[in-house]
Image 1 (cartoon, rainbow, N blue to C red):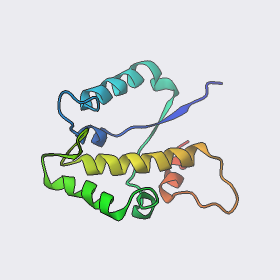
Image 2: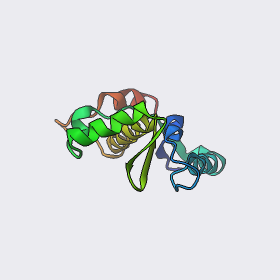
Image 3: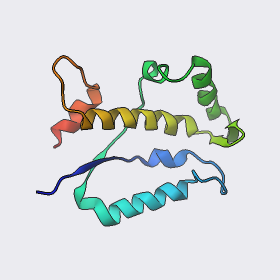
Image 4: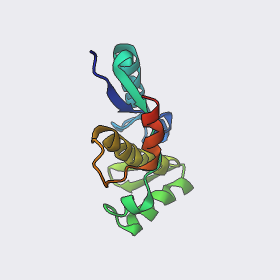
Length: 128
């Protein structure tokens, strides 16, 4: 029996544009996607992320910081910090990345009686 592994993958992550010299350049993620498709397609289960609920983001970030990230949508290119460039869709890539982590966690942790999973996971589990 071949065990399968879930991978959270979304082309909208590529919309986080950081400039050519930054290590988070979209080409790096494209290379990872190509490698996964070429070498592991038969053992990967694609997981589609959804935006994390705002109340979950607020567990780890202040409302001021969340607003700062959301305002990157107003600029084609800006910086959140000296080493943190952001583009107009960085906010969406970040929001999806946080939601993808939640979705992956829900998929990896067995259902515990009384613990409600995220609603978007129920649809994904039906596909298995």
